[in-house]
Image (cartoon, rainbow, N blue to C red; front, side, top):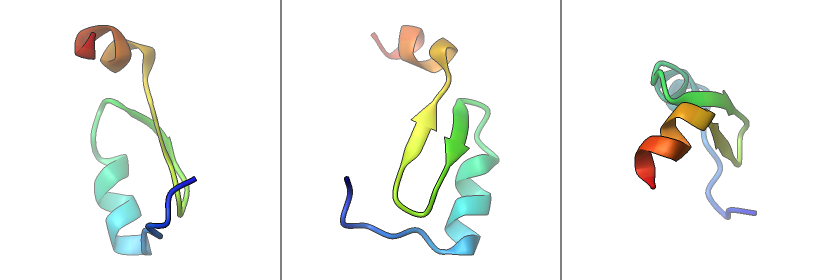
Length: 39
């Protein structure tokens, strides 16, 4: 778990990325499409 805590503004910016599946205040989950692209 990350020590970084995202605020509401940061969460909205992260959610705007098409490769992000979900965001919480401490974590980001990426789409399978991004995971394949990254590897």
